[in-house]
Length: 139
Image 1 (cartoon, helix red, strand yellow):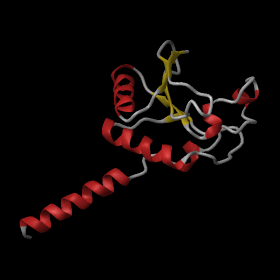
Image 2 (cartoon, one colour; image 1 turned 180 degrees about the horizontal axis):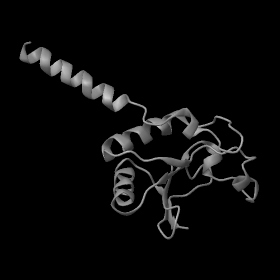
Image 3 (cartoon, one colour; image 1 turned 90 degrees about the horizontal axis):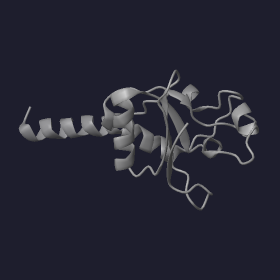
């Protein structure tokens, strides 16, 4: 194989890797109702973040229907109901790397739960126009 063909083959392999979807449809659906509603542009960004991190990260929450018990208790629906938010099960160094890479990719809304059990990182891409200003918070 010539060097040129080898380079093209490697480039195509790299492109396919970047286009890979690391998340199962079941992970993205509302856990309470089974409804779909995850934003595809956010999914593409999440896949880029996952690829760059180089390690898997399970989602504990993605899209939530307004009927989801957590959302139903709120005065105002949260970012998950827009299909533009995830809670990623992660702690320690992996949590820090997810935050670093997410910020590099323009994520401006980050929640951190790193005490006790159920540690996670919340990422969302909701905008000020949607009523969600840039923020970082802890649970």
